[in-house]
Length: 436
Ligand code: ATP
Ligand code: MG
Image (cartoon, rainbow, N blue to C red; front, side, top):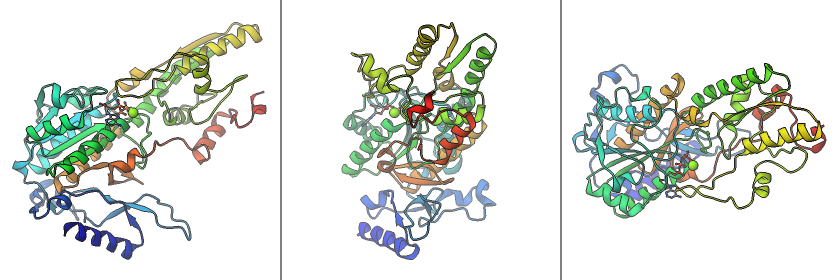
């Protein structure tokens, strides 16, 4: 019956407003007849002056903001924010937070704001930190999180809860969630982590458990689909400029100076593109999306072909890519000594770990707060199997599967790449005659 009501609500939204709602699951859809409690924010001082405290569950955020004539209005998502009725009674909530995958500026801010958001807005004081990533659910101790414990952690880089790769065992994780009586799971991590979160959500649903699973997307590379940008990206671009500046100063200060900076973004060149646009010290920006050539061959594919025997994977099963920066540095050195008979002064900088390890900047800190509070509002309202994030600058609840389907990449046909080419005046590498 609840499924039917839900279908009717969705149909209504399609009929009234002419768009398709990409719906997130709600716990009441799987477990009918559970009561809804009034949202404690009704009595909160913080929200007393807000004109419209609660977001209607029918409010939606459009994925396509530019509506062209005669084209469908496209997919919409539920708008994030506090709901008038909540699914969980505050003193019955037992929440946990876990962080997985690589480091990214802002993770600690998200942890802090989930803890403070649950406690200050909803009066929840039963929050566990799962240590060391997914495997922490079954192989490590947990830690109790309170606003006092997390008070200063946003000033530090890294993750207060530690992280890991690999070790995702859905059944063991859900058994453990069940054993510990956890009913809200907050999962902070990248594409792999979100895939793992989707499996946890599915298993929880299969077992018919009243547990909300919320994903907070973390990727320094900004490669998560649908959402505008990921937290830590802004900080990364800012810090990358320091490396670019160092390379520029070194190259300018000597005869025949060449500076090469390798930035993160194994498959998506957003950091390189934005750092280049921001800094103005870059003569040529190479990204994975744009195949380039020297005299022969191309980028990563070329490195792989010419360095056989290296096809390793990390603990999570991600292919370990070869170091394009080192390869390029060597190639340029060889070119100048062998072809041009010149000695060059090459400075190669790889700031990856320096960038990942710093705390987030002001704009990312604000952004992390919004993400965390949106996730808390969503889980409290009984939404589950969702990832939170801004879509056209409005925060939305997005079904997890929707963000893991594809990786966001720089579109060479979009205006931003053209702006970069215009700014650096570099070859587009679209045809080989550019290379002269
Ligand atoms: P990043 O790539 O930004 O560092 P990530 O979340 O993609 O972050 P991974 O190391 O790929 O990092 O994955 C993190 C966790 O998610 C690991 O514990 C891994 O076991 C788990 N995981 C990755 N892919 C999957 C998958 N397809 N199904 C289930 N679990 C997965
Ligand atoms: Mg990943």
